[in-house]
Image 1: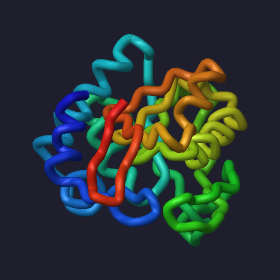
Image 2: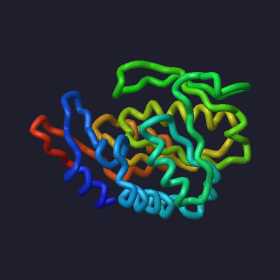
Image 3: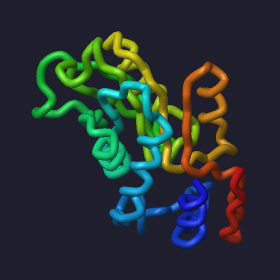
Image 4: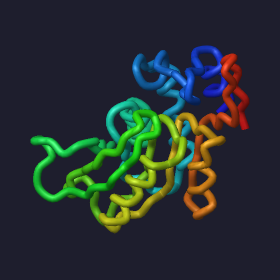
Length: 190
């Protein structure tokens, strides 16, 4: 999506450690008009695939997934990063390592929100090594639901997660794939 690349170049900031800060439009402050169009584009990319749920992990992927679910007219399922009092009963869980935060956590989702009859699209704001998506894929598999595919607003192609998933035959769409980021702030797209 050329518009995502242009938005990254206009509003993104490259930070040390291969971190791309896009908080001005994607995951801290949301450019609703732009992200609504992004949601429509994802709905177009996965049209005809009978998606019944869009699933993401809290917190920064929520706005992206919400606008996709809205454009598709389906429910959104939010995986919690930690068990809490409002996640009761049986849950699906997965251990996930966060590249951004440099730690692992046990993500959970109540079994009542993910059924065998669901066709699930996994969504996340960033795809780097693919750990969040792999964790959610484990939950979809445990639920015996159907994985339709994965979508990321921005993929860090140089970290290989998207290519690894594609090599396994998984339908992965990324609206922008960053191939290289330089310390001077320059960004090269695939």
